[in-house]
Length: 123
Image (cartoon, rainbow, N blue to C red; front, top):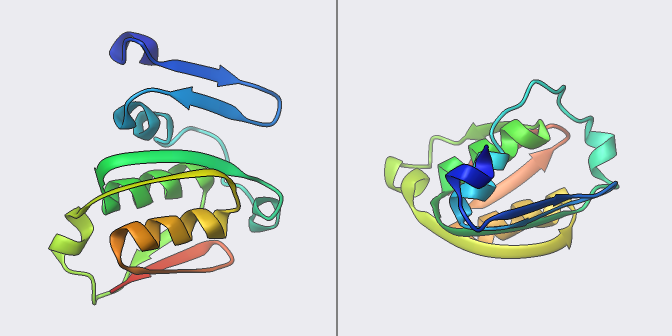
């Protein structure tokens, strides 16, 4: 279904990874919530993510990551509407969850901190 929506895209699922080639909207669509249970924060320590974002609002990226990985995202009152809608771009290869969140923070020029399964975004 996604390949029909995003012609020319490729998704390859292997035992321990998923490789995606396509536009950023495809990546975001793959991160939308599914019916699976959230991952335990202990399991995140052993998982690695490869991810590319091109010109997407930081709120969309964080909400998609939150839904697909299973952490709770909290937006600090210091974040204004413009902060949430700013477009970000970044790419990471085989990084931990904390490194992925750091890449989002760097791209958005925001502070992103994680405590177990709770992630806070602040200015």
